[in-house]
Image (tube, rainbow, N blue to C red):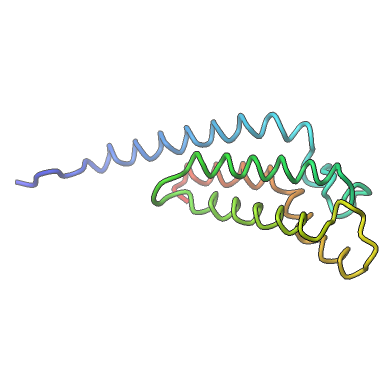
Length: 141
């Protein structure tokens, strides 16, 4: 007789319930910040935006980073949510890089302006990517 065996159906149901809880929590957070700051081409951090080198992008970067940190707290613990963890890591790195480069101060050096493009693009896409990462958690990714 197997002691302490885990019912695979119950384990899967528990994972799904956890993923749904995470998705709901992340979505509720995003629903506050995304309309305020925009995303994709409507973000002040979009590389084609005239606001990419301004405080507006810096504010959006802070909000995106805060939402990424929030998502990470929702999935704390071992295993699971690999896609969401990856997105959070990229957003946190992009936010730190944007800050370190001083992108919001409208740098004049061409090399610095170019270096700001990649983190700004990640930040502009941050809200949708967080949502996608949470959704992938439902698929066990």
